[in-house]
Each structure stands twice: as C-alpha cells, then as structure tokens.
Image (tube, rainbow, N blue to C red):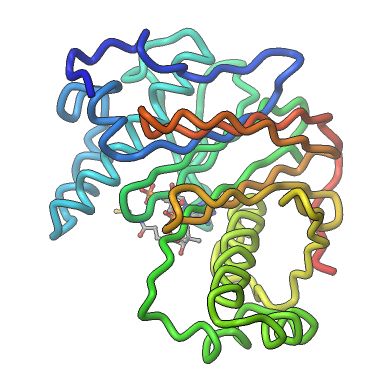
Length: 260
Ligand SMILES: CC(C)(COP(=O)(O)OP(=O)(O)OC[C@H]1O[C@@H](n2cnc3c(N)ncnc32)[C@H](O)[C@@H]1OP(=O)(O)O)[C@@H](O)C(=O)NCCC(=O)NCCS
C-alpha cells in the first residue's frame, strides 16, 4: 500500500445532481495510507477528544473517521478540509456549518473500519445516518435481542441456525442504529419498536426512510439510512485498497420518520 498520501490514488467520492447521496466505508489503514499526514486538518476539539482515548487502536480509528469526514466533505464543497466547521445539536448529533451548504452527514467507526454517509439536502427533512459494527463473537445476541428486536424479528431470529441468527441480529442492529442516527435520537430511541421492511437485495424501508446494509470484510456489517424517498445502492468493492463505496440514488422528500 503506498504511503505517499496522494489523493489521486483513491476515488474520493463526491456528489452530483444525479447522485445526491453516498455512503463510503474505508479501512483505517487505507485512510492512513491515502488520506492524511498525521492529524492534519483536525480541529482542537477533535484532537482533544481523540487524545482522551486510552487505546492506540481507538485513537487511530477515530482519527481516520474524522479525516475521512473532512476529506470527503471538503472535496464535495471545494474547500480545504481544515476550514470546515462542525457543531453538535442537543442530542450530540454532529452537523456541518458552512455557508450555503445543504449537506447532511454521519460517521461511524468500529474495529478496522470507518464509515461516512453524506446526503445533499434541499430541505430540513433530508438526513442520513450510518453505522458499522464488528461481529464480536463473544456477544450473546440471544439474551440481548429483546432490547432491540421486535417480537416478529425475534421469531425470525429463533428460526435461524446459530451463524445466521448472529448475522441477522447484527444486521438489524446496524440497520436500526443507522436509522436512529439519521433521526438524531441515537440510542435514546427504543430500537425494538422500529420495524423496517427488509428486501432481498439488502435495502430496507422504514416509513419515509430508506437504506441498505452491507457485509464488508466478513467480520463487519454496515448500515446506512437516508430520509429521502428512494435509495438504490450501487456498491463498488475495491478490496485492494480497503474501500467500499455505496452510492444511493435519492429523491429528497419533505417528510419525517415515524416509528412503525
Ligand atoms: C452515536 C451513538 C448512537 C452510537 O455510537 P456508537 O455505536 O458508539 O458509535 P458509532 O461509531 O456508530 O458513531 C459515533 C459517531 O456518531 C456521531 N453521533 C454522536 N451522537 C449522535 C446522534 N445523536 N445522532 C447521530 N450521530 C451521532 C458522532 O460523530 C460519533 O462519532 P465521534 O464521537 O467520533 O464524533 C451514541 O451512542 C453516542 O453518542 N455515542 C458516543 C459518542 C461519543 O462518546 N463521542 C466521544 C466524543 S469525545
């Protein structure tokens, strides 16, 4: 993997009128190799947050997530990553403050993966959420299921064999967390009352909100959700560089999520 930090080597995603939303997932090492020199471009707040992390892996993971966020958003807006200014709403949901920007974004990090979703908003209701989760083989999903699965989902899970039921639980968790990160409720929401309709191609729908899940490297599952009306995930796997890009084609819609 090259270490010359040239951004031309990877497809830094951008938006267009035809592609108003995207989600990209990158391994920490690929962001380190291609996207930044040290902590370049991060704000004092981001530095302070990262330096509080005890484990070096956590610091590397979070640094990669915030560098990826600045690189991609800066590329879309045509400004230097370090010039971007971020704030948080009262739920702690981060947002970009930039003149005339209509972008909404969300980040997630787990294990060796970081994820970023971005959507171009033409109205206040257009929002996005993303989640990446490690498999965590030691986790007893069966005992946790009532906390985040509906009774109908628990019945589906119970009918599956051991490996399938773990993947089912992880996918639903990731899907629902992406949904509540789009709404901004975070884990304050009652996940078991969210009942997305899931389609065979991995896309899902949950009243005015669409998304998709992606199994990435066999050990991680990622979900991305957007408020707009329709979403079609076009997934490009770039295994050699550790990038996965999913490009949803969206039609913004002025509506808010309701839990089913
Ligand atoms: C976001 C949350 C729903 C789940 O987080 P998680 O599964 O632990 O972590 P993820 O990697 O999926 O997402 C974390 C990111 O979501 C974003 N986030 C935080 N609160 C959010 C909210 N209410 N809605 C949407 N996104 C949120 C942040 O960008 C955060 O990353 P950052 O702290 O590096 O900026 C919630 O539990 C949370 O607030 N986590 C802790 C965030 C935190 O402690 N930050 C430390 C700052 S020093």
